[in-house]
Image 1 (cartoon, helix red, strand yellow):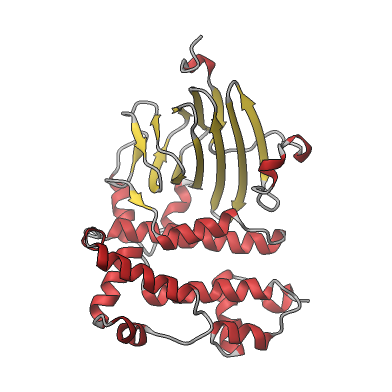
Image 2 (image 1 turned 90 degrees about the horizontal axis):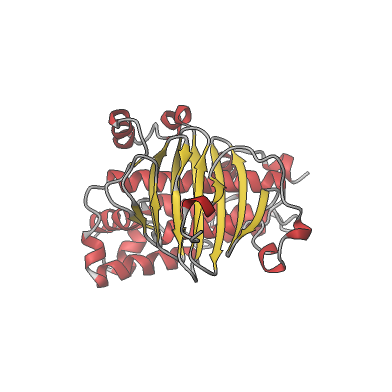
Length: 330
C-alpha cells in the first residue's frame, strides 16, 4: 500500500482523554527537552513519521502541542472526538489538510487560524523531510461565549456560521511578534505544576485575545506593506521587551520614535493586535512572575525590575495571574 494511502495512516488525537501516557524512558533523548511540566505525553512512530504529542488542561483552554517529523511521504489522520473550536498555530512547515465534508485547506507556516471542528477524522499529508510544530488552543463551544465576551465581532460571526468543519477567519493571520513571544513562553515553560498552570493559562488567554483582535481589525495590512513603518513597531516592541525596569508610556515612546501619539497607538494595535499599554503591562507581569517564582528574590528587587511600587506590583500580578503571592511564597 502507498504511504500516502489513508488506510496506512495513523490517528493523531487533537482532543480528548488518552488511556495512558508514554513512559519518558521510551522517549528519545532529543525530545526530552521539549516536555512541558506535568503534561500528558504521548510519543509514537509509525512507518516513517515520529510524533511527540503533549496535552494540558488550562481552565477553559485545552492546550495540545504536536512535534512531527516525517522521513518519507506519509499521511496521518488528526481526530476530533467531539465538536470544538481550535485556535491553531503552525511553525516550521506548511501543510495541506483535508477535513471531512470540506475543501482541502492549506495551513501556512507561521500563521494561525480558528477552526470549528466536528467529530471526525481528517487527512494530513506529510512530505518527506517535513518538520512541523503545531499548537492548538481548544475550546468547547459552551465556553466560547464567556471567553470571547469582550469581542462582540467574533461572537456575532460565530452565531451565524452553519454546522460543519470550517475556518472562522477569512484568511490566515500571520503570527506576529507578540504572539510568537507568548508561544515561545508556552513551549519553554519549566515552572512547577501549580505555577505552570497559572502561567500557561494566562499565556493562552493573551494569545486568544490577540487573535480576537486580529479578527476585529478589518485592515491591518497597511502597516505590513510599508517595510520601514512595519520595522519601527518591531523596534518599539524589542525596546519594551528589554526595558521592563524603566517607566515609559505612550507619550515617551511617541517622543523617542518621533511618531504622533494617535498614529503610534493605531499602528501598534494594527501591527500586534494588542495596545501598547496592554503589551507593556503583559511584559512587566511576565517579568515579575518569573522573579517571584525564584524564592531568593526579594520584593525590592522584583519591583525595581518592573518599575512599580510593591503594593502595585503585588496587586497587578495577583489580578493578572489570578493567585495570591503570599500563598505561593510561603
